[in-house]
Image (cartoon, rainbow, N blue to C red):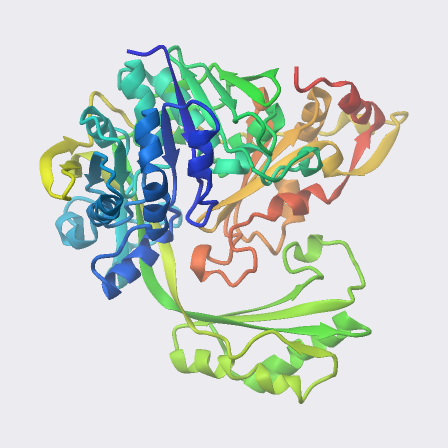
Length: 605
């Protein structure tokens, strides 16, 4: 067994920089490379492709990416794990082997299957599980007939079996984003599957690097501190056998790694910070310690973990009506008034009542709405959207924008033709008992034929369901408003960093204090009630707050904040990425002594 292992990330989503894989191989020594291609809705997209062509259903971009570097991987002895197999990992493997054969290159590929249960729904429902929506509590029978995809989030057990085969490339379908990074650690460092603290360290390491450059300066609040954006460096984890790990990037690359970039990524898409649930372990982020030990090098230690739950998450998607979006550019004087008049004219002429409709003034307040500062724009992109189950109503909408160009106020620029009607595929998260599921590992020969297969159960060892802890929403009155304390009104970004993300129709906003004094202050001031008031209208559900003292962070969950989430949303920011910026732009009254603590606080030491 090794004492440490280096795992590099080569992409955080389908559409990421395809040149990263080669750069990670050429930039320095690593042992493994992992990449994540699959978001919740991606599986349904792949399913649609496969229905048109049964040979598809995988991430086609990855084929070109791996074929380009396969010889270099072999030369350097680097192995790779990825979920690029989508819903057809064997098809993906055979396509790669076919292309490599043309180049005279041979690699060993292992395939992990078992996550795709779309053809097995009747086997599980209703006898073995209810498939109730875990976010809303809705009944599965209401959408049963319209299910398009259903994929289990598999964990590390089948990936470990694939590693044992000696494969150069392991192709999986829907495995968790973190498991592609965790599996090599467990395999190479000899960790046991009930060593919860070490598994938690692996999960946290995977969470930090799974989104690629988001931990190396991408989406960073203090983006001005990033000196280089060319040749962007992607993250690498060096994991020690004891569970402590270093996050770094190759020398002479762009981007930035600091305690703040890592803190921001840690709170990204986070729920309860002391119960980050995966199929393999429940990680506790609340005792983590971060230490800057050199330029672009952060040490992470003190991860804590608990036994995993007896369930696996299932990502389903179902057909759920249609939507369309039209837009035109409005310019000239009094642009906002003119755009509002165009909006009025458009909906009056259309006459239909839709299940959902939305108007946005891009360039004025489309992302932040009432939280945006008041400005007098020179031009506005008027964005109009509808959703309905009636196809004819959607068609009428698509034909209604063009007449406005010649029969409304002047100063209009055309941005496109008729709006394209889109089938809405809605995300349905649910659970299934682990005892229902097993996965398969296949090893292919150079001709793409299966020469070895093994069935892997999803339940390994003693696992127990955790009792959820109640989130902390406690706050105290701000004692700093007493008479005699000098106060300053500043944008929240001067005292905090923040990052936001989505899970279905819920937005998480992680707020990170720039000093200990600031953290004590925002714990009192930024209550769940205050955030609910700020985002009133944007967030229509409950707001929950979690405190993460060790990261000097607060995590807020804003329910019903994305108009249904995913492809069903009519919002221009359907993933909540701009919510953090909206919060950071708001003013807050801060005691001067708290404000002065920021310059004196040495965060990076």
